[in-house]
Length: 138
Image 1 (cartoon, rainbow, N blue to C red):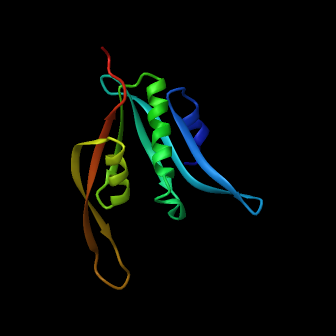
Image 2: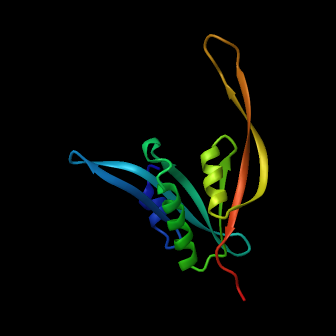
């Protein structure tokens, strides 16, 4: 995130979008998303860094940001868009399902939280890989 131009804008198959508004003369970020072109046997786009401000959720902004990534990938002839999300991000999981992404893989991660006044807390969550076909060779 410290070098957006170097990481996301220096290659034509990568991009980074920010949705913003102006509030009392100052820019306020509402959402952002990135895509990185990957070769996985065939060219695909990997969606990263999808964040929507809590005050803009359930307004369609997340759908529009995701559709921007899908359109970008279609324009480049990518075969699919892939992403990873966690099972605890239920709104994101529902959004991707609504937009036609299918679940292709899961694995479980364990997070260890160390607390000052108590013993460590362990939590498990599932990481899900999802994809959407955007272009098919005939």
